[in-house]
Length: 396
Image 1 (cartoon, rainbow, N blue to C red):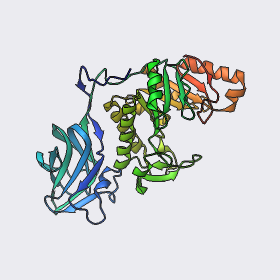
Image 2: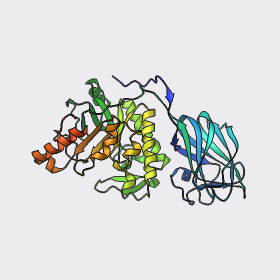
Image 3: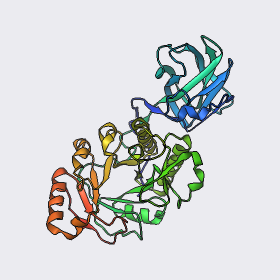
C-alpha cells in the first residue's frame, strides 16, 4: 500500500533558513558572481557586486514557498549603508515590490535579517539602490527564511525499538522479518520496493548526498566545480561541494525519484564531508545547513529521513531527522553520542563490520547485549552489504 501524502491538521513550523537552488543577476562585474551568494562563504572575495541603481540579483527557490524574511551579509557592511528593495514574481518576468526602501544597519559584516510580509512565491530578487557612499550593490551571502508546512500525517515517523535489514548490493533478500529495509535508490526496482511494503515493511532508499559516484546515471548533472577530493578507500567517489545550488538541486531530484518509486523515506550518505579531507574547505556550519536542507526537502516530499553517522552534529540535527543509522559505533565506543535520538523516542539502527564480532562469539554477545540495553538494533554484516552473511543482535 502506497504512503499517503494528503496533509491534515496543517500548521506552520518555525521558519528555517533556505538557500535557493539557483540565482542570476542583471550583470556580473569585477570577477564577482551571483552564485557566490549561495556558497556559504562570508569572505569578502566571495560576493556579487554591481554598480548602479536598479541592478538586481534574483533567486529561484525551486518551488512555491512562503517567504517570511531574508538574511543578507553585505560587503563592507560596517562601512556604509546599503539601500535596496525586495521583489517577488510567479514567472520570473513580472515583479511585485513587497519591501521598498530597505536599508542595512551599517554595523556588521555578518548576516542581517529583514522581515518580509509573508508571500507565497518561487522567484524573489533584491533590487539594489546603491549605498551611502556610492552606487555599488554588494552582497556576500543571501538566505531566505521559509515557513515550512507540515502535518502529523505527512510522513512516517518511526519510534525507537524497530528492527532493520541493510542491503545495498546484490539481489535483495526480501525474506527477513524486520520492520525496516534500507536499499539502494537507483539499483532497486519499484517492484521490489512494492513487494517489501506489501509484506508490511517500511523502505528507506539509499543515495550518497555528499559524494559524487562515477557510476550513477545522473553523474553528468554535476559540474567540475561541484567536485572535491577523492574519498579515501572508495574508488570512483569524490566529495561534493554541499554549498552548490546545483548539488542541492540534484539531491532534490533524487528524493523526488524516491517518492516516485514508493520509498517511505531516504538514507542520504556521506553527510559529514566537513570532517574529512574534502578539498573544498567545508565548515561545520556548511554541513549543518546542508543536512537541514536535506531533511526539510525530504519532509516536504512526505519522506522520512535518516541521519547517517555525522556523530559530532547529532545534538544539532536530532530534531530535524527521524532516525539515525550508524556504522561501527560499538567498535569505536561512540554509541553514547546517539542517545539524543533515543531520548526523543527515535530509532537508532547500527552495523558493525569488525572480524572480531564475526569470529568471536563471546565478544559479539557482549556487544549485542550492550546494543540492546541502549535501545539500538545492531547487525554484524560484510562491508559490501551484499547479504553474504548477517548476524543479528536481536530486538532492543
